[in-house]
Image 1 (cartoon, rainbow, N blue to C red):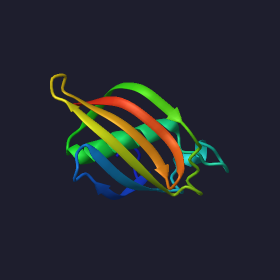
Image 2: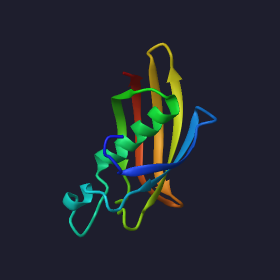
Image 3: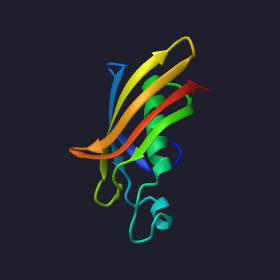
Image 4: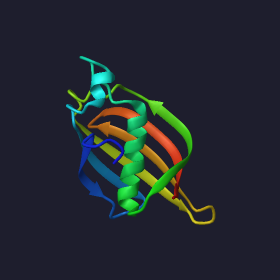
Length: 124
């Protein structure tokens, strides 16, 4: 975990390695929000990307490195005081020739989409 106590994985369903679902609870009291931003906390975009990486690492049981990000879209602000829980849905394709894990992801809760990501990971 990049940031200690930033989040907790409540549920990780990786029974189908090509369709992974994670439920994340954010720690609304984490120190990162003192600087981003005081009295108006917002989850930094880089942390949303890191969440995807760490969910994939949990699913794969190995360290990964982001090698390429093709498409990143911030659809709505994640305020941890309002949006304490996130769902991350990952569509995964394995490219064994290039040793890549290709991921399309949507971070949302219920009907509110916060973040879309498309990129590749490699084993470290």
